[in-house]
Image (tube, rainbow over all chains, first blue to last red; front, side, top):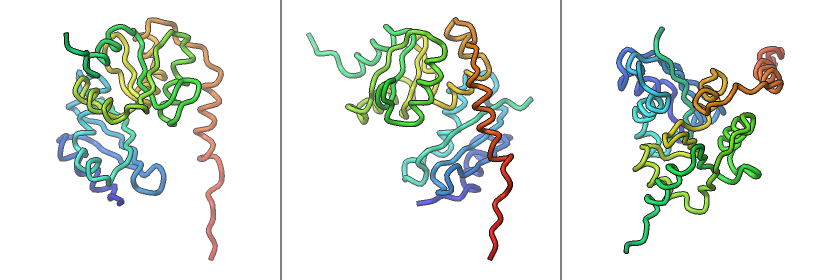
Length: 78
Length: 133
């Protein structure tokens, strides 16, 4: 079951207002995704805490099997 | 006396091993590319680390680490009792020098690094594939 990259991006942006999100399909199968997220909410958080925020935003699509793997790269807007 | 639960045992492992890796397979024979990536990074630092193969009890360990660290995918690297992250975070912190700092060692000299960068650069250098009808 595939998911649209836009849907993933919108879910993350909705969960982290003000974030800049870029989602790519790593394998061409639309279930191994890579999200690059820059969000003001990351300020002061460890990387794992930042990743948790992103993961939580799309958790429902993990749970229903739409996403198998999501690589995450986070940064605080400079 | 009550038997220690799996959670008790995992907490004890995290406490007792300064550098602990929960992984799929073993450092000698990783069963997952993400686990292998973390092993590859750790090996360059020459630090002593404990590795636990999660495959024999995957689901129970997912549940326990979800409870302890709010994270349930493997690999998971713990340093000084705290979850650092999985392959993405470990590689990022390796490249930025944060991992060396966390482990309390020098950033390793790594000729392999330039080879890796070349590898990453390669696809961009190769000419685009033309599809003709």
